[in-house]
Image 1 (cartoon, helix red, strand yellow):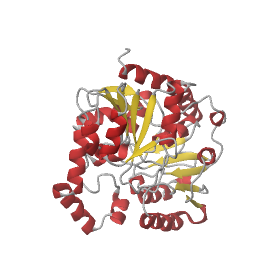
Image 2: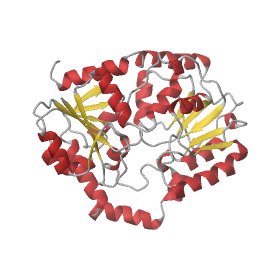
Image 3: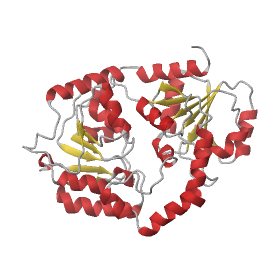
Image 4: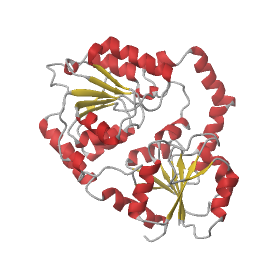
Length: 379
C-alpha cells in the first residue's frame, strides 16, 4: 500500500488520485495535510484529512503493509510529522515550485522583476524579510524544508533541469534519483481538446495572481512590442495572490491596454479555461522560476508562441528537448510587423509534434506505473 501525503490545494488532489487509481487501483491511501484544523477541506470527501502528527500516526499504525511514501509538494509542513512516518520506506517527492524555491531564496526580490519588486516590496517588507531569514519564520521554513528534503529518495518532475538545480542548491540530496513524473494527471494529446490547433489572436499573461508572474514588467514590455497591437490581453487572476496586488495589476492592465485588457477573476471549469488558452496565439510567462508548466506545455501543444525568461530551468529544459520558444528581454523591442514576434509555421508544427511524442496517449499512466515499480523495487 502506498501512502500519499498531499497539500491542501484546491486544484491537484483529485487529479492526483485519478491518476494513481487509473495506474494502480485500490493500492493507495490519500492523506491531505491541512495547515490548521479549521482550514477548509479543499480535496472533497474522497480524502483523509489530518492537521496534527497524532492523527497521521493513527493512519500509519492502522496497517503494516506500507510499501512507500509519496509526497506531493509539501516540505516544511511535513517536518512536524516525520516522527510518525515510516521513514525506512522509499520516499518520492513530486516537486511543486513554491515551497522549494522559498527554501533557497535569500533575497526578498529573488523572484521579482524591477516593476513588480517596486510595487510589492516596501522598505519595511524588505527589512521584515531579512529579519525573518535571520531569526524568524523564513529561517525556520528553510531548516524544515531541508530536513524533509534530505530524506527523499526519488525526485519526480517533468524537468530534469529543475531537479539538478535543487541538488546544486543543496536542497535535495546529491544521491537523489530523478524519475520523470508529472504533478496531477499530466497531458494526453489523444484527448479531444488537442485535436484542434490554437484558434485566436489573444495574448495570455501569467497563470495566476501571484506577484511572481511579474505582471507589471510583462505589461510594460508587451506595450512596446508591435505584435501586441489590436490583440486582447488575457490575464488569469483567479488563483493565488492577494487582493491588494490584484488591484495593482488591474489598474496597470487597464492603463496599458484599455478595453483590450481582459482579466479573469472568477473560477473557470477546465474545458472553459482550455478554450480560453486556445484563443491566444501568444503566451507570456514572465516568471523567474519554474511556474505555470502545465500552461506552457498546453500552449506548445496548440502551436502557440510562448515567451519565457531565458534564465529559468523551464527555458533550459525546453531548449534541450528541441522546443522553439521566444525569450523576454526587457531591453529589446521586436522589429518589424505584428507577426515578427511569433514563431513560424514550421516551428509551430515541430513543437506540436514534440508534444505528441512526450504526451502521447497513456504516457502519464505508464510513467506512474514505472514510478510505482521503482518504489516497490521491481526494477
